Length: 411
Image (cartoon, rainbow, N blue to C red):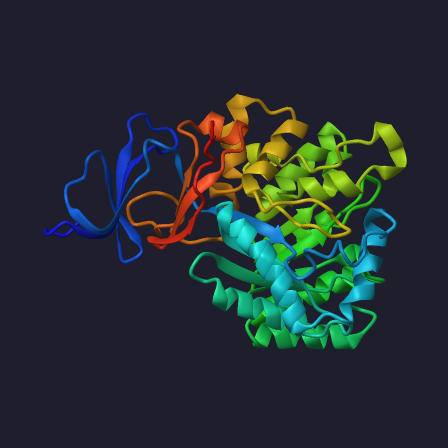
C-alpha cells in the first residue's frame, strides 16, 4: 500500500476459502494490493460482501461458443457423437459472422453472470465454415474483454489430412490472432499424421495445444500415449492439454496408474467435460450405461493439471446448459461419489487448477494478483459448492463487471 491508502476498490467483509473471519480486499490499478481485517483507507468504489464467500473468477478451459444455441435448428440429430458432428456439419455452411457472434454472445453472457472470467473457446476451422466463426470469436473477445479473458483455440473438428485447405486455414487463423491450436485425431483418416502436423504448426507459431482426444469407452486403443510422446519430443511440457479422454474411465487400475505417471512426466493436462461425456457415451448399454467421464480427480492426485469444463451448450452434443461452472463441478462430484471432503478439490478444477492448465498468470485472491473476483450467495465453501450458490457480483480487474441480485421471497 502507498501512504495515502487510497484505492480504486475496497471489497469489505469477504470470506475467503480456508479462512475464518471476513477480510477486506483492496485493489489499485486492477491488482490486489492488500488483504486484511478492517483495512484503513478510502476507495473510489466500496462494496460490502456481507460475509459471503469470495472466489477468484472461474476458469472454463473448454467451450464451443461457435456452435452453441443450435437446438432450434437441429432437434433431430440422431443421437451419439457421429450424429451430432453430422448435424452441425450440415449447418456450418450457412453460418455467418453475425449468426455465430449472436449465439456466442448469448452463451458468453450467461457464463459471465455465472462467474466465469477466463475462457478457452474451441473454434472449428474447415472449408465449410472458413474463418467466419473465427472472425466472430475475435469480435467477442474484443467486445467482452471488460468481463472475461477469452482465449481462441482453432481446431479441425472434421479432419485435416484429407484436405490441404484445412491446414492453410488453421495457419491463417494463427497468423491473424488465434491464441492456440487444437486437434481432433479420432475424426481424421490419418490420426498420427494429424498429430504430427498439429505439433509442427504449434512449434512453428509458438502456441499451446489442446486436443479433443479418446472420446469413447473402448480401452483397446488410444491416442493419449502418442500425444504424451510427441509433447516430450517437442519440448512442449506444460503447454499441452486434452479434452474428454473418456477412455480413462474404461481402463483398469494398473493401466490408469501408468497413464497418470505418463501424463505427469509429459506435463499434459486433462479436462473432463461431464455434461457432454455423460450424454454421448455408453448409449449402447441402455439403462446400464457407464458414467463415461474421465476420473480427473485421480489424475490430480498424481500431480496432473486437470479441469472440469462446459464443452457444449444447447446443441446436439449437449442439449443442456446454463453456463454455470459450479453446477458442472457439482455434477462431476455427484457422478464420482465425491463428498464434502473433496468439494475443495472440485472447486479447484474450475478455478486454481483450471488456471494452471491454461497458464493464467497472477491468478487467485492474493496480494499482487489480478483483481478478478466473484461474490457467491453463501458464506461457506461446502454450502456454496454443494448448493450451487449463485454469484451475486463480479469484479474484473477490480471493475464491477456483473450484478445478479439475490432472489427475494415476497410473502
